[in-house]
Length: 528
Image 1 (cartoon, rainbow, N blue to C red):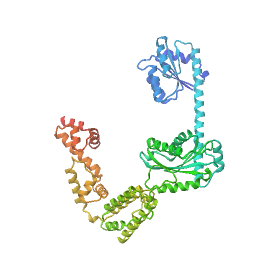
Image 2: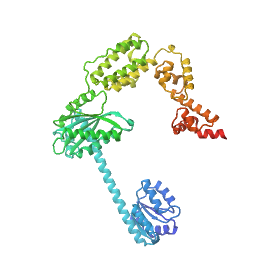
Image 3: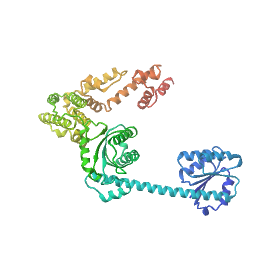
Image 4: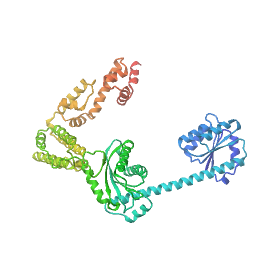
C-alpha cells in the first residue's frame, strides 16, 4: 500500500512521517511532495493508493491537484487536510468526490484512524475489482465456448455435452426446443473494415443482440461463421415462439443500430427451426438465400422473399464485345459491361443464376479472344489478388464489376508499347494541365483529350514522370499560386479560388504540404 503526503510545510510532513507507525497501518511506502507539481510527477511514475493533501498551497491548491488526478483517471483514496479557515474548501472537495477531510491541527491518532479506514476501503475496492475481473473473464470464456459450439452445430459436428452444460447456465438456447435461425451478413461497409477483428465483431453484434432480444424474453446465441457472416439463434425462455412480426421488428432495430453505430449495413435471412438440433439443415438453406442476394441488398429477408428473376437469361451482346476487344477498345467493353449489369439490377431480373450466366458468357468471350491472339487467360490472373477476384466474381454484382475493371485494365496495360508514343502523350498532358490550371482538372477529361483509357493513362504517367497525375496537377497548381503570391497583391483566398480551391483552409493546407510553408508565410518572405 502506497501513501502520498502533499503539504507545503516541511514541518507538517516530518511530523506525520515520525508521529505515525505507518507499517502498523499496513502502509508499505510513504511518499512526500511539497507542492502539486511534485505530486503530479509522483503520480506519473508511481501507483498511489492513498493521498493526504493540504488544501492551501502556493501556485496550485489541493483542490486543483484533485481535479488533475481525476482527469488523468487515477483513483486514490483522497483525504484533505484543512484548517478551520478553509473548511468551506473541504466541503467543496467532498462534493466533488474526495473521500473525507481532517481538520488541522489533529492528533496523530485521528489521522491514523482515517488512514486505517482508507486502507480497508482500498483493499475492498481491489478485492471487488479482482472478483469483477474474474467474473468478466468467466463470461468472456463462456461466450467464446458458446460461439464455438454454435459453429460446430452449424457444421454438423454438434458438441452436445458442452451445449447441454451451457444450456443449463442460460448461455445457449435449449437444444431440443424450437428456435429462429438468423444469418446476419455484412453487405456493405461505410466505415473502416480493418478496425474490426472477427472476435471484436462477434462481441459487438452479440452484445447488441443480447440487449435487443433479452428484453423480449429471448435467449440469443451468436457466432461469427465467416469474416462477414454471423449466426444468430433465438429462442424464447418460456418455450413460446416469437411471432414473425415481432422478430422482424427486432431485427430491423439491429439493422438500424449496426448501420448507425458500427458503420456497416446488414442483410438478415431468417428461418424457423423445429429444433435447435436441426439448425445445420436450416443454415444451408440460409446460405443459399444469401447467395441469391447478388445485389447485396440490406434488409430482413424471410424464406418466401425472392431476389429477382431471369432464369436462363443469356447475353448475346458479348459477341460484339469480342470484336471491340480485338480492336483494342477495352474501356468501351468495361463501360458497356458494367452498365448492362446495372441495367439488369434496375429491372429486377438479376439473381444468382443470371449473374453466373453473365460470368460464363463473359469469360468464354474473353478466353476465345485471347486464344486467337495466342495469349493465355491465366496470365491475367497470375497474382493471388487477381485470382481472388476471378474466383469471387459471382458472389455479387459489385465483385463482378471489380473483375471486369481489373481485366480490362490488364489488357490495356499489356498492349504493345509501340502503339503509343509515350513522349508525345506526356507532352500533350503537360500542355493540357498548364492551360487549364484555373479549372477542375479531371482524369477522365485528360484521358479523353489524349484518347487513352483513364487507368492506362494514370499508370503510364506515373511510370514516365515518377509521380501520380493527381500529385503532378496539385504541384503545378501550387507553383502557379506561388507565382501569384510573389508577384501580385491578390488576397490569399482569391488566389486559392482562382485555382479551384473554394475552401481557403484546404488551399492553405495543400500549399504548405507541397511548398513547406503557408501562403501567408510565402507572402511575408516577399514583403521582407
